[in-house]
Image: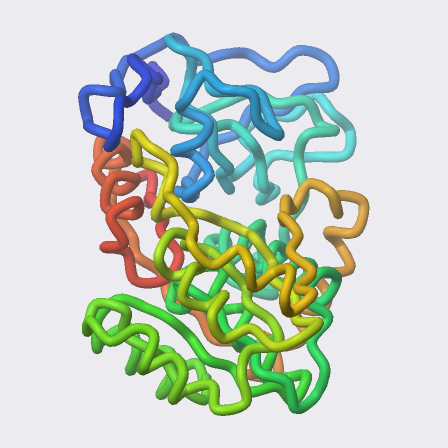
Amino acid sequence: MAALNKQVLLASRPQGAVTEENFRIVEAPLAKPAAGEVFVKNEWLSLDPYMRGRMNDVKSYVPPAQLGEVMVGQTVGEVIESRDPRFKAGDEVLTQLGWQLYGVAKGDELTPIDVKRAPASCYLGVLGMPGITAWFGLFEIGQPKAGETVVVSAASGAVGSVVGQLAKTKGCRAVGIAGGKAKCDYVVQELGFDACVDYKAGNLLDDLRKACPTGVDVDFENVGGEILDTSLRLMNRFSRIVVCGLIAEYNATQPYGYKMLRSVLVNRIRMQGMIVFDWKDRYGEAREGLAGHLAEGKLKYRESVVHGIDNAPKGLIALLKGENFGKQLVKLD
């Protein structure tokens, strides 16, 4: 074990796009667990779009990340020392320890994970917060019915890829929106979507209309901006929009000017924001359902991995530019 911890701190708040200068990498003494606490060596760090919002000092559904503090994020790792009887050295756990190699957490803040059931990294992706977000966002808010068309933007990403596959288990037509031929081919050929539209091809409305000949019943929105405005043109009466993410707007200095909100009125669309914390008491239910689909081969996933905590800022910047392919992770070597 190292003599010192390495941490990535939030050094400044971005003005527009995130840069590496917004972070500072430091070494710090290793913390010791007190009674009821556990000392963990982090193995994997999750990078997620929500982190961009946490870097701003604005009111949101959770407090912002604090300047000079360890950048927020989920990790999975190994228990090295435990002063909580529920955990022992060698246990694998899901934590909220953020961008650092080691950390101390209260036992109540840890979730045990079963690495015999799935690799540890899955608990940050397909069996973790992204997968759980897809599960409750689609089933509780989207409420898809057999024969309906479900559109999901950022379809090759950690959340979107699960949404489309879950829609297929309900007998729906799953249509993805992604950037580039390679991602679209993956969404259709590997994940089993019925169609995928390449928004970079320049024919978004026409291509999406062809992919959705009976209109759109559920839009699972991860992108916002032009993508959402286009989907609004094709929504059916009494359709549902799950607003899960607006990544197209996260780096913008001015809000996007939506032109098609009239569709919400005309088509009596139910449009609801999705924050996974609202279902925190039911995470186990979703994880069991997702694990069942994974074991049956009905749920596939892909990971984009950067190595070393020093490269975590680069990984987040790439994610916010849409350069990741699947769930973005940092392997903490």
